[in-house]
Length: 178
Image (cartoon, rainbow, N blue to C red; front, side, top):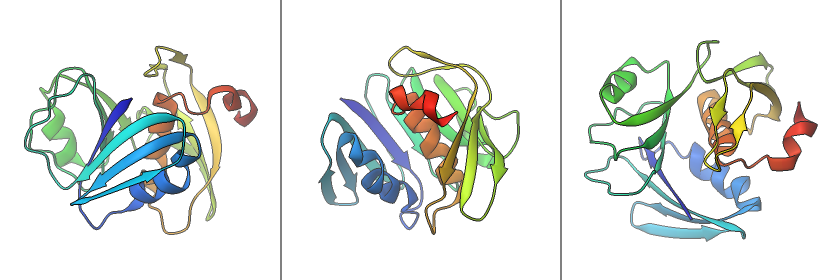
């Protein structure tokens, strides 16, 4: 089981939609939002808490997925992997001096994840440097052509793709996508 903590505005439901519509195809997801619990899919279990803020979290090597407007004001557990929006300076400042492994997502080539091509309906998400997936597998720079779900923010698509690569979700598909 992998614990994923989503932090940010309650009204931003992009990640919930992407988990339900895409990630649940390969995973058993327990999704906690507000005072509700949802379960979707089958397979390896992901437990996800989607809250505006967290007081304290004690978890081993948790994954944090920060929404674009999130400014976290809590201490991250040691060895947290944090997927963050590089265009949000307040978010990045809040992450300084934290015991985390940051994965930046944004619109520039210096980000861990960005994009190399964009149209109204499609995006090519780029992994710009080698990273290590949660499985321990080394992921080399690559490009993934994807459709942009209607109504989903560009950052959410890039960050969600980063999470899927960190989960090694593309697995054998990755060679076909390049």
